[in-house]
Image (tube, rainbow, N blue to C red; front, side, top):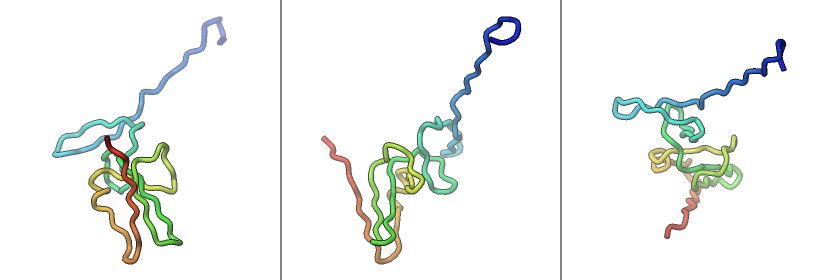
Length: 98
């Protein structure tokens, strides 16, 4: 309790949002949605890319359950455009669809 018997005040922050610009119109995206790791891209991530430098391999799969500092989350456009160095292998993990 604070002085004077009043109960303490608690403040809650509103969720942050990122601004995404598409076709000239700005929209707000909740920050709990993971964004694409590519610089300057504000689209929502749909896949996760990881590298194995020793085996010269890149693994691309569905968006990971949690953000990983050693992985790259990609939007649909960057998932399709993803490329690796010459001689590397890309393993694409697809989800099963009914």
